Length: 317
Ligand SMILES: *[C@@H]1O[C@H](CO)[C@@H](O)[C@H](O)[C@H]1NC(C)=O
Ligand SMILES: *[C@@H]1O[C@H](CO)[C@@H](O)[C@H](O)[C@H]1NC(C)=O
Ligand SMILES: [Cu+2]
Image 1 (cartoon, rainbow, N blue to C red):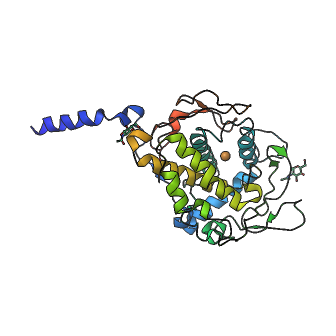
Image 2: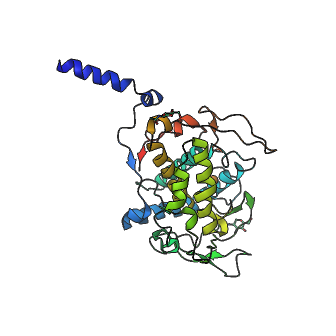
Image 3: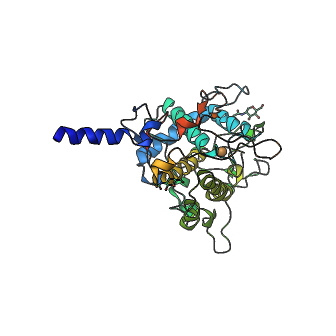
């Protein structure tokens, strides 16, 4: 009797549809990704040291004589944005999930033993300029200022990246200092905005039940509001500010939270159309679509980046 019950249970578990999508049950100890404000000082220091290491290591792609590995990340992100292969369609979420993973590996190659960390800007939305991520010692430094030596751009003058000179601006060679230009506090809004990425904004995004509608509202809404709130090189493709990866790890976590509301239906939920040069909808997306990584890592397949504990991934939030 006891054996029969057990056999029935095993049979039922094997029949779960979610199981059939992840045949490789290799993710036995997923690594926890924490928020920056919950990480210890030692963890934050180790992360920042490795992030600085990436800005000093020579380029892997050799796109320019004095390019660094961090410049490679900026270059690939900008290059894949024209024509648009990574934003403004379904592929936005799996591509950036993959990009964060490639960066996490680069941090580890620089001696970091932790995981990607995220900036929980929903939690910080009522006073974003006070967020722990801007700390000059245990964070990424603060707003840019007019120093007169950075063209029209405000220059970040504190924190670990004050001496980092990004090579690219939108994949063009434009050496300049890292720039930020926070949205001023106005109309009852705190500095760096906040209403666009607070709990109410996220509730609207989370109300979407169709993958590509969720993706579109998250990308065009809170994700974009953080980019424009921080401003400067973070506004567009400009700098690929190192804070980018904390921002996109948060976007990744918000997608995962949405998937977790109905994991059987949503873990592999993926729909929508590719972009085309003339703006008309392209081919329908599929889980077999390629995720290009421009030489930073071998290209991936969307299906392998849908489940954070399956395919090519093994982490938790
Ligand atoms: C890289 O070379 C350019 C000149 O081509 C120079 O303007 C820039 O400052 C250099 N960057 C670094 C980090 O040395
Ligand atoms: C899964 O999605 C289908 C189609 O959208 C829907 O009919 C079904 O109720 C969903 N299942 C659950 C458990 O929500
Ligand atoms: Cu992007």
